[in-house]
Structure formats: structure tokens, C-alpha cells
Length: 124
Image 1 (spheres, rainbow, N blue to C red):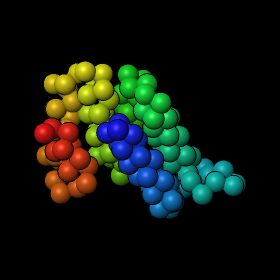
Image 2 (cartoon, rainbow, N blue to C red):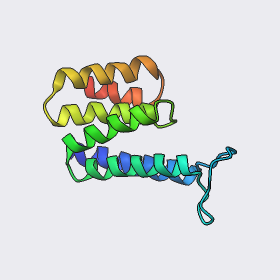
Image 3 (tube, one colour):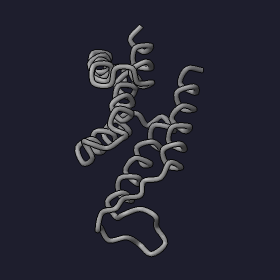
Image 4 (cartoon, one colour):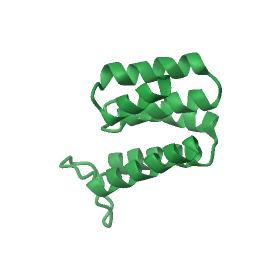
């Protein structure tokens, strides 16, 4: 039940983020039909791939995808969410110490955010 609730949060957040728009004023090459720059398009694609793996329960693959996302986009507006889901992937793969460290990082770096609140709940 709890996993389903988190997946629901994930889908909701992903939808909100995508609907909020990722337009940029950069001079990056833009596909004629795409509202995103090439950089943003790749970032969204990377995010969606990680999310799909998480949604179907491929937590080890999702973990690697979220880590790769952070390596490539360390200052994304989705950084705190990726870190939270890395913690969740660690937890789902029974790597509890790593999960706690990642949840702690989310709480320390993003105090007062909904992701810090969710991380705090996971720690309890």
C-alpha cells in the first residue's frame, strides 16, 4: 500500500513538473515542434526513464538512473526529488544505511520542503 502511495506521488509530481514547463531562454538548438531546448529535452528524457524503472519496481536500475541524472544535472530543480527517490531505491533494495544517509541529505539540504517531510517520514 505504501509503495503504491509513493508511486502515486511520483506520478503526480512528474505531471506537475512537466506541465509547469521547462522553457528556457538559452540559445540551444531547439527542435521545431518542441517547447524544450535540446538540453532540457535530454534532462526530461533522463528523468522519465528513471521514473519508469521506479514505477515498475526495477529499483536497482532506477537507482543507477537517478544517480546518473544527478551526475548530469546536479543543479536541476528536480535534484531534491531525485535524491529522495535514490533514498527510496536504497530502501527498496534493503540498503538501509545508504537510504538513511540520502534521506538525511534531503532533510538537511532542503528543510521545509515536501521532500524533506517525506524523507523524515521514511526515517521514522
